[in-house]
Length: 389
Image (tube, rainbow, N blue to C red; front, side, top):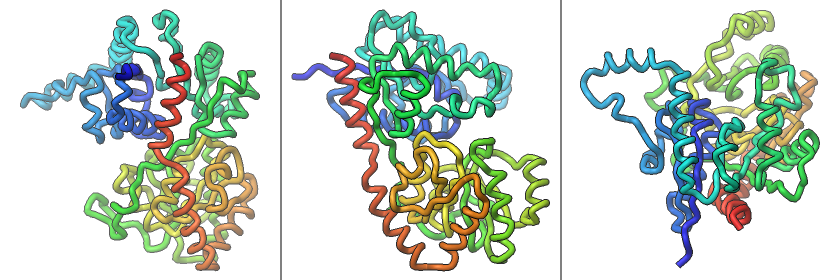
């Protein structure tokens, strides 16, 4: 009988993200391996507010939960205590939990969930796999604070990793460019969509306080510099002027800033831009009902939202940069994210021709079949096995 391979994951991304692509990636890996008789794994984590992790109760037995924090009737008192028990203490306790598991040495391979190199001194020559999600900090250093250690951490870990996983060919090329890593150490493994189109209904449920407009474009996620939201708003001005029934729905990303409101008023579209929450149920319905998904980002390591849109039969209009053409293939329309007229013309093209939209939906249905979390997990397992030899 084959001996189980023991994998250890750490806390990092589950205290950084409440909801996001990286934590989804690790949740999906763990979900796949929870049914694999050849893999045993543990997530070294005590406290987390990550929505995706808590939505997968089948993973509860694989991490050190402290759900007893709210187990009695003194809810208010404990909630107040939790607020006082600030984020730094959560980070400290979760890090201590990861170090405790590292010191046990009861694992064959370690897979950190982010880039903090705290664990190197505890490995005692055990191999570790590093997944690099993008080279955003290296490509757009001005977007981040001067004290942000991510680039330096990434460099340290990449130079010492047994194997490296890149989530796209574009990311692999950037790793080689910026970090001078041997290409033979890097394996490209694509991600996937977690959305099941068979479970999506067209009408909106009761979870929304308001219904979206009848005809809208969808923008997803945060709106920081490289996501190119300002460019999108400026490009939509003339499009909205020609199409009085068209709106923009933004999913997630937090409340609009005053600067964003000023820009929308300047372009005269403030009443036609709407903000909705981004939980999985709402997001799938927003994709399903959208006229098109618009992704103006200047850089993506992979771009899970592209596959989510395809899964929900939502046509995708994408930047022609970074990994997006690699993921979208011939199932999307592309534009120059530095040219407002390019985006406006692309949107007008799909608005003017229903056959183009139908064709994109059909191609998206086929394209998304090329990606699956089963495939991601199987290929990652091959990397684990090679690193453990």
